[in-house]
Image (cartoon, rainbow, N blue to C red; front, side, top):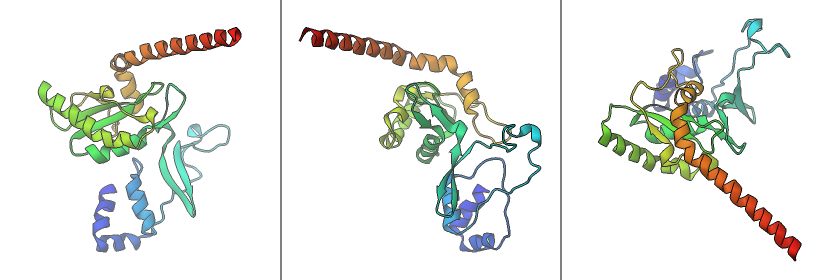
Length: 234
């Protein structure tokens, strides 16, 4: 479906043919934000078909009898725009929200020509990390060059991200091809499984942060104590 929409952007004939259809069904995964914005701009209505018997009762929420898709939408004047899934929102160490899917979309835009599979992880961590596979197998030297290229390109992504969303160089982890867990149905990287599979590696990457956080807490504790004593003395 995404390929059809991309072709329709440059083919007036194909776009007009799509507009004459009563409906066009797609499944397996959400459309990209760019595809949705294009369709909305062409006055093509994107709706979710209602079926009272789908899915079966065991899959519905027992409190309201509805099926919660975990999809997130942003209200607009005449409808809603898809903005990702609830599973894509990571809760960071300081309780702030990090939209992993949003970061992945920006990374894909600047790195699509050199990466084959990747995922942003970091649930409960200070900042996110990037697990990434190159398009081709790399040796030690080329892996370093690939990593440096990613650091350079992600500079553009980090420049428009909040502090808790920035991916620092040491958080970019280059993996051999075929390492990341891929969903057999959608062909996408499974975030939770990737985070679990590489937990020990991620723990090592974040060890320095954990130590620094403890030092920082101790520093502020002593500062508060000193200020308290100074206040009492005055």
